[in-house]
Amino acid sequence: MVGGRSARGWRPSPFLVLFVLFLVTTTASAAWHPLYSAPDEPTHVIRAAAVARGQLRYARTTPAPGLPSSVVRVPRVFADSIYTPQCYIFQAGLPANCAALPSGTDDVRGFTYVGRYPPLYYLAVGLPSLLWRSNRAVYAMRFLSGAICALFLAKAMAIAFGLRRPLLLVGVAVATTPMVLYLASVVNPSGPEIAAAICLWTAVIAVGLTRDVSRRGPLPWAVLSAVVVASARPSGQLWIAGVAAVAFVTGVLSPVRPLLRSRSVKLGLAAVGVSVLLTVAWTVWVGGIGATGLPLVSARPAWLLSLGMTGQRLQQLVAYYGWLDTPVPTSVYGVWAVAVSAAVVAGVLTARSRRYAAGILLLVAGVILVSVPFEVLEAHRIGLFWQGRYTLPLAAGVPIVALARVPADRLRAVRRSWARLAAALVLVTAHLVAMNYGIRRFAVGTTGPRLFFSRPAWSPPLPHWVLATAYAVGLAGIGACVARGRASSLDVGDQQVAADVQRSLTRVRS
Image (cartoon, rainbow, N blue to C red; front, side, top):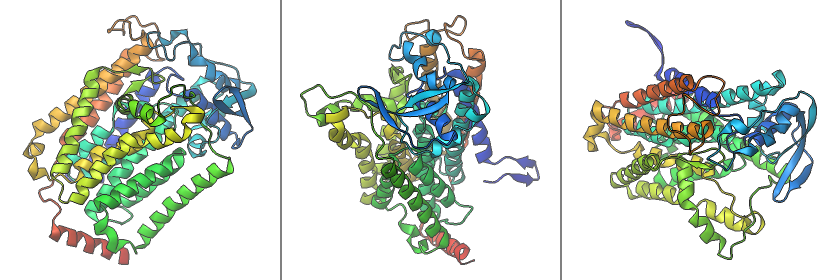
């Protein structure tokens, strides 16, 4: 798992290779999408610029019905971004060429409706706004946010790759939907939250499989991922609780119980606990986060309305571009529907215990139903506000948990290179189809020509074909890593478990 010199010379670690590939992919996507074309990106940019200037708590105002906002003071180029995408959002047939990017370096009053969100993410990505008072800073924010996401996504795949469990590697690949990469390439705390959640699910599974609680094992990444998930958005505590609940029900961490007295485990749990408490304390200090939405006008019960949105929200887990106004072709949704369904069926049918099968089914039910109680509580005030991306930190765990313990000898095709290559090709192709459809929406509109590279109405800073090539190369490299994953010659048996526990106890004592 680590790079070094050998008889054949230096070889980079899988983590380094995957990080570069994911970084290429997120950077190309960040440069390819119009600025402020992603959900709520203007308000997140304004918040990041304000936090970077030390503005943590602000006065509240309500410039529009149902839109409680915080007043900040930031350079005009950021404050005016809230108006930039208004001419084409929610109108998928219109390209983005109608929008004029803001300018101006003088400090003015701005509004952000995420002014009470936890500040950690905004502090990290807002630093470029101190260097440039121009749209160059927004691109730098995107690149920086993408690098954070690439770090966690690469580590998740590297952990699965190092365990020599190709099905777990496929599970991580399935969890990394086009929506994950889209959110990873724009200014939005959902991107790092989801990427860190994917790493958290994988690292927790790895700790249970290897019983390794050393400093060089998966435990530190599980802790770091949990801290990021807990502090990226106000809902982070919910996803930490979800991971803990699934781990308890499935018993995935039961073999680690003898090691709970180790110092590393205690420190890890303490770090996660502190991050959760700090986020809760922040929310209490600012007096709640506020919310946006449209009031309910239907007489039907709120829970029926919420459940009625399930289909669209499941689509949003896979891909929905623009301000959630552009679905992708049905074939893309079909690929992920088949992949996730197959993973759940394989996980349940091959589970070594009813407890593990119940944990998988509980997780699936949680993904479908988690939005209902929150919308029922808030329906009278703000209506239906939940989006599919809010559920992605929890939903990402479904293919990972389902495939983590499927024995490779039960599916002999997993050992065949052509089967792994076919699965990788299907996923990469679906990614490219989704991305092409999303960019076409901004370049010529969804009603424009399918081949838009030659005469686009809107163009990114670099030619379309350059960014498309970089994005495809990054995805192809990631797909090759998935196809290259090999199964271990021995599954985790009783003798190996005892040996792993003994080695871990030895490390702890030393």
